Image 1 (cartoon, helix red, strand yellow):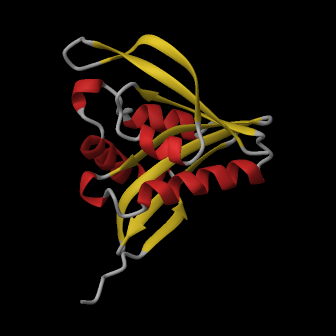
Image 2 (cartoon, helix red, strand yellow):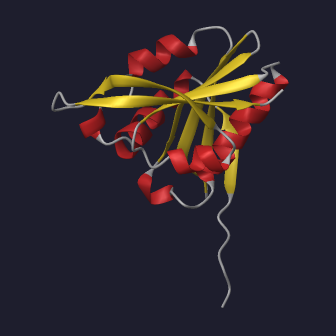
Length: 158
């Protein structure tokens, strides 16, 4: 039986992608946890020095994105999201590898990220070599007002 191989393409993103990015966030981030950013938050961050957006397309359609930044020798993965129907097809892994490689190219020695405790993406980050370095109690406020911890991870890359 022949197996279909998904065609994943990564490309630089811009503010022109904000509508697609917002749709990906709405699909990917459960509203119970309050993790999705607003379009104005994304626009504000994208205007800052050292910030870049990478969009992942699968079979020609936007399926995920990563928003990252480098300041001096520190990088941060600000957001990484993949539409639920595009998960387990390599987009998250490709976006994460791209963020790490671009951070290295921009001179970062380490990359940080923060994620809600219990988020399934932790498995992806740990497989990529990220180590837990901190925890912020009650950092995320969910839609219902419930609070969730944030876990901070770091990976040495330089």
